[in-house]
Every structure is written in C-alpha cells, then in structure tokens.
Length: 301
Ligand SMILES: CC(C)(COP(=O)(O)OP(=O)(O)OC[C@H]1O[C@@H](n2cnc3c(N)ncnc32)[C@H](O)[C@@H]1OP(=O)(O)O)[C@@H](O)C(=O)NCCC(=O)NCCS
Image (cartoon, rainbow, N blue to C red; front, side, top):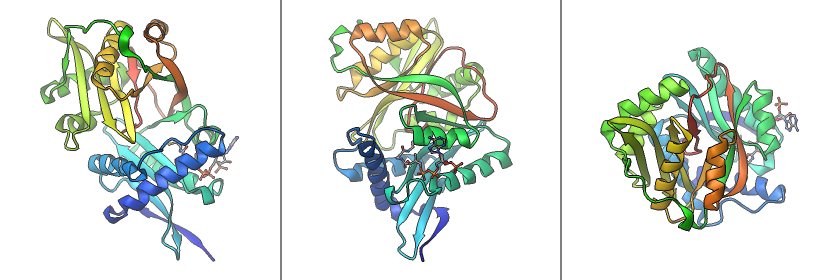
C-alpha cells in the first residue's frame, strides 16, 4: 500500500520538481477547459527552484509517495521579518482532492504560528480549488487584482524622466517606503533582485527632488515573464513605472493591477491592455491596508 510522507525538497530533485510544477499546473488548467500554462520546455520550470531555493534554501515542503519516491506535492514558503509568504503550491494530478495541499499548508501554518507571523499569498480568483484550500485554512481575501497584458506598446506614454534603473543603494529606501505604507518588509527579495545572479531581473524607481515615490521590479524568463513586485505612492507614479518596465520587456509580460485603482485601470485600458485572469491577495492573520498601489507577483509571492 502506498503511503505519503512530508519532507523538504533536496537540491538533487529540482528536475523532478520542475516536472511536478508543469504537470500539475497544466493538468489543472486543461481540466478546467483552459489552455496549458507551461507550453515551452517544461524544464524551464526549474527557474522556480533556482529562485525560491536561492532566496530561501530548505523552504520547500514536498510530499513523497512511498515506495516509488515520486514527488506528489510541493509548497514553497518565504520567511520574512514581518510575515511568511506562501509561494507556488502544486499537487500531482493523480492526487488532486486527497488532502495533499492541505497537509503541506498546515505545515507552513504551524511555522507561521510558532513565529507569530501572518501568512500571505496571491491566488487565482478563477481557481476555486486553490481559493477554497486557502480560505478553509483561515486565509482572508483582502485585495483583488486584474492580471493584464499589453500586446501593443504603441500607445504607451513618452518615457518619464523621473524614472531610472534601481540600484542596490536604493534598497533601504524601498524597504522603508513599503514597510510604512504596506506593513511588510521584503528587503531580502529586493537585495536578491539587485544582485541578479541569474541575469533575469530588472527594476525601475521613480524619483523626484531626491524623494522615491515608487519602484517596480520585473522578471524575464520563459516560464515566468512578469512585471512586479513593486509599490507606488500614487496611481500616476504606478502608471509611469508600468510603462517604463513594459517598454524594457518585449516578450509581453503579465502585470497585476489592483482592481480598485480606478484611474490606473482606465489608464492601462487606454494603452490597450486586456485582462487575462484575476487574483486575490489572501492573508491569514494581521493585515494592514496598503496606502498606495501594490504590484504583487508570483516569483516570489
Ligand atoms: C489547488 C491545488 C494545489 C489543490 O490541491 P489538492 O491537494 O487537490 O487540495 P486538497 O485536497 O489538499 O484540499 C482542498 C481543500 O479545499 C476544499 N475545497 C475544494 N473545493 C471546495 C469548494 N468548492 N468549496 C469549499 N471547499 C472546497 C477541500 O474540502 C479541501 O479542504 P479541507 O482539507 O479543509 O477539507 C491543486 O488543485 C493544484 O495543484 N492545482 C494546480 C496548481 C495550482 O493551481 N496551484 C495553486 C496556486 S499556486
């Protein structure tokens, strides 16, 4: 009889983990009548292991089928000073609905409770399985985001002279800005992006009279082509940052815009952007409503 055990992902298992992420995600989308998400080389999904294990070594919970040794579930998490983020969660399609994800999530909940920290994640509002998994486990949907694509950049505004590339020297200011306005500290993530060991990150800051009003990072890789994370004090600054990073990335990256940011949403519609999905920020525990525009991402959440 098969049994399932819970343990941590080993460095030798990145190829198997990449297969699990691609297989699980594609199977879920196709079973839901949607096209597969990962259509190129499935091993490109190893980027999730490279980034997540590079950021937080040893923070990937996996479920192993005994005696086959097959990975049937994985859940990355990211401990930060103010909270713990939950990264990508996957169950092997043979085990959908068997409590695999819930067991992994309970492990992360135990860690968060022992450290007295809230848990945060961004989940698809179009995936009732993950939405239900998280809300049953005590997460509360706090913000709605529109995932958008801008295929044609011809209607972007002229470059804003107040925008420049982000540098490592900016990090303390970015961290202080986000901590004050959103209550979270992601210094570790921003230092990792600026170091850019994989050569896949970029970032912009908006600055006027020496004061930074916002920033936006981006990742360009076949399995993950996204603008974010970032934060802006106003919707105007957010629009300028989106335009700058979108202009830099020809491969049509997806970006998430808070659905309540009415002016920003109308601005990106005027540029020609189209909605492709909806996501919700879900928090288990204390939450501070952000004062400004939040750009979430999935790599890392
Ligand atoms: C989403 C996903 C991780 C769920 O994994 P899973 O192992 O099948 O989920 P589980 O069986 O552990 O748990 C599902 C939970 O949701 C509950 N649930 C499912 N549908 C529900 C519904 N419509 N209403 C209420 N609860 C529901 C189940 O009862 C269970 O909760 P419980 O353990 O408290 O009873 C899996 O479908 C998957 O890997 N999908 C593809 C990748 C993905 O979308 N990942 C999530 C975002 S990163």
